[in-house]
Amino acid sequence: MLTSEELERYARHIVLHEVGGQGQAALKAAKVLVIGAGGLGAPALMYLAAAGVGTLGVIDDDVVTLSNLQRQIIHTTADVGKAKTDSAAESVAALNPHVRFITHQTRLQATNALEIVGGYDLVVDGSDNFTTRYLVSDACFLARKTLVAGALGIFDASLTTIRAHEKNADGEFNPTYRCLFPEAPPPGTIPTCEEAGLVGAFAGVLGSMMALEAIREIIGFGEGLVGRLLMIDARAMRFETLRYARDPANPLNGDHPTITDLSGHR
Image (cartoon, rainbow, N blue to C red):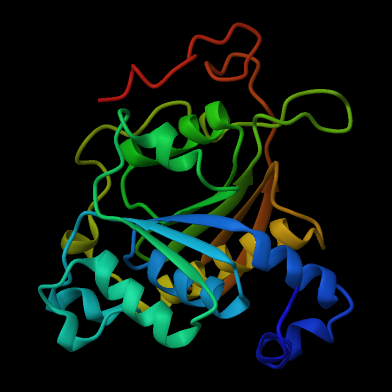
């Protein structure tokens, strides 16, 4: 049940036909884990908290630095030197005290991924490296959790939703992250944010869209991004969507799967 204060807080949601009281109640009952409290995780956390997600978790082992503040808007100057999870917890509590916020001040690894991911309904991956992305996607498949995955380049970005543990209307498994990217690019071929730079507002755009996609998945309205990759070109302000299908040779839910646990991750 929503309290009178919550009814007022979420009034702009509740008047929406696609959300209403039932959709807002679904948000309150949802448990969402955000991977990283950085450029993508920061805006995603803020909008998920503002939307009324009842249980919101974040995993991050880093501390706030001054150079983070150009894009990681959940942190402030006073938070420099503080654990990002603690800083995020304070911001979320100030924004919406109705949210139960759980912090995991650690690095996601093969040894803890299934336990952590298993405690949530949906995962929003805001990580900035392929090693973590493959680990998160494999863990979500094994734990049977929905994954909203975003990736940010210098002036390009992509977003998709993965429910590889579920089957589509034709009775076939949905595609995995590995169907999109069978192998990670060689180390050093993609520059890091520190090396190449990044417009802070662009991270805000993608992080907000990740939160929107998570909200749509929880409530269940519109056409989701399962089997669709949304691509953004910030130079031309162009948005495009392409469809992708399950690769029968993928090692996760392919015809002859070889990944049955996370032992292959370091």
